[in-house]
Length: 107
Image 1: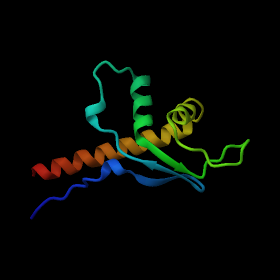
Image 2 (image 1 turned 90 degrees about the vertical axis):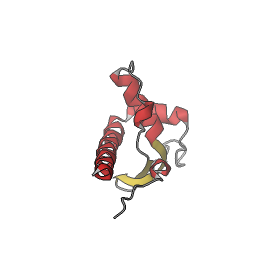
Image 3 (image 1 turned 60 degrees about the horizontal axis):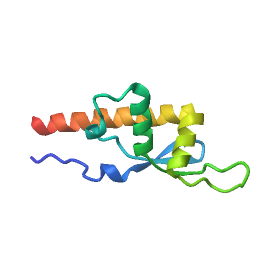
């Protein structure tokens, strides 16, 4: 019996965050972890890599949906800790699942 792995993890998946807000998230590759990264730098790197896009977040002043840019990711990271926690939980679950999948490949 052959084992199967998802070779499209880096394309991401839409995940519901709050109400009608969806976030396109992808896992964080372990190869991007640097030994000298402090917790803040690593957290920000993970957030910036994993958040690909969002749906349903509107700019209060323009009434238009926000567009994900590097600057917008920095803004979301700086002012929306609940989104950081959501992304961190997603990353942790994904990394644990991928680790289990790899262990199953070895057995």
